[in-house]
Image (cartoon, rainbow, N blue to C red; front, side, top):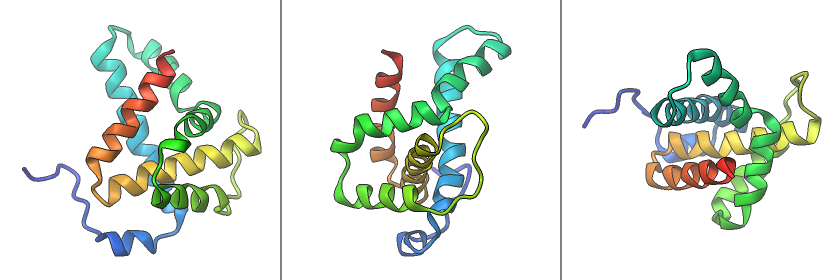
Length: 136
């Protein structure tokens, strides 16, 4: 089956990308995943969907999720997280502290990296863990 959104870069190319590029893609992938989970498993109206999605995608929630799953990551994934966390980002949202934002960026970098290298099974595993943690 052909991908709806082609991922054309080889793993070697993706590894050389700046971590903020991984986070840029990871932000989109994670938000789409959360939105689809909410649409698939609730009967909320669009406003309520938006409010619920914010609970899951805000920096503090992502930072806490990363902390909860960190010990289950491979060494390669931990390296991706480290690179994402240490990336120089000069933007800070008004509703997040610096530490949460750094770890949220690291989490998004991991999601984006796994998506871009087509590690879909591992990505699904991490997303499932994330949803299970956030639903508690």
